[in-house]
Image 1 (tube, one colour):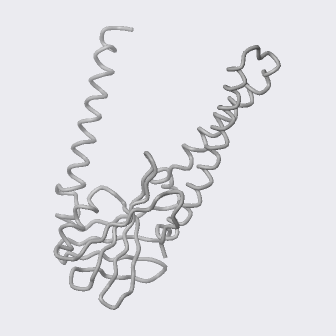
Image 2 (cartoon, helix red, strand yellow; image 1 turned 90 degrees about the vertical axis):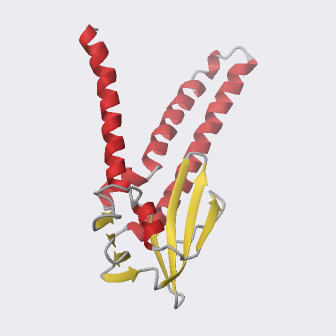
Image 3 (tube, rainbow, N blue to C red; image 1 turned 135 degrees about the vertical axis):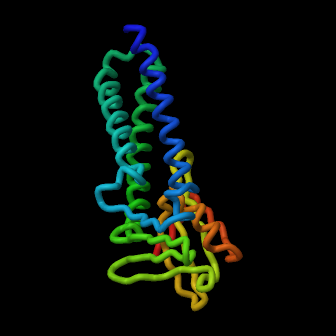
Length: 210
């Protein structure tokens, strides 16, 4: 490898990381954030890689299944007890990953009900969030919201955050955490509104999203 590439590759990586940090700052609290201008957050069906974990888990599941196939088809050459222990361990991991894929995919299917055809329009002038869903619109402000529930569903490195806004008449509006500047906007727009934090023990709890 040439000296130029030895310097170019790490400097390019550092430059990309700096660029992403600058973009994140701009989109979360800077001039491009909902603290300073109107912003719309929305996912569509082609954005599933942005928020889902299922594709990655499916990849690892098939990788373990392939490893299981290799190990099990070569058991006839096993000569020591740990060979059988290895085969059993790989098989258990394969089953475990497929079970995790099933649970995660079902959970993300529930979240899809509050993501599909939903858009959040944030306006710093009125400090309001308008939730567009299924041809309807719901305007949320500090004057109309009585309680904000922040729901975290986490297991290891997998975590999902969604919100339940309860108005003064008891009606609830759910929406997913779109990241970027949404969290900062919630803190700024809804000062004084009580916040309740709810943790769900995945995969054992039923997560309410409707």
